[in-house]
Figure 1 (tube, one colour):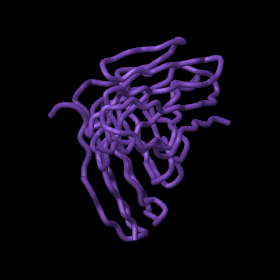
Figure 2: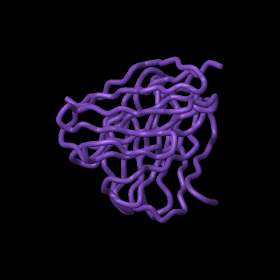
Figure 3: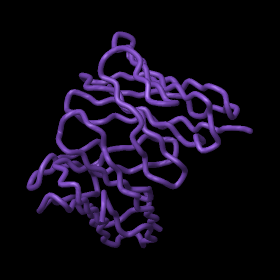
Figure 4: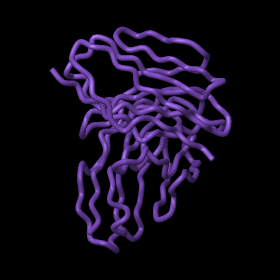
Length: 113
Length: 109
């Protein structure tokens, strides 16, 4: 693989169910991010990780959790999905924490009913 | 608070020039990014400005005025494939990106 992959591509989920969105990058980037994108709003940061073993909360972290066990993987978990979490989710990465371009995965379209 | 403003939608004609404006207000500033996002796809990087002035890259140019909290993206010789949303994002003192809602650019023949 080259770049960032996300899985699944899309998912319809019943409210109250647990769901993990997967993100894997093969660029050996240190920093990784999870965003959600909703119509009429800018990308909003959910959680981030500056390096393996560390994570931080973004603008809208409630209802989501992340882990960063290694450099390549950064899964996002919804412990108990709610309809307001219906969104498109993008994973992104950068080589380091400084000012550099972010590379995005293809996104996961999640619908919570 | 932190805020990014850009127009919701713009329309231009194939072959013409269009300027998309962006104003920002952030806690600290580490640069201004522009991304392109086609419908149903991920954002892709276009440009980065951290110093005042104009950066030119082919048909696309980006301008920054730090004192005014203002940037614009200039697209020349518009092509139909330029129909997309253009996202402005400012990097704050924590190196986090604050994103605008995007400007949807419609190109007409």
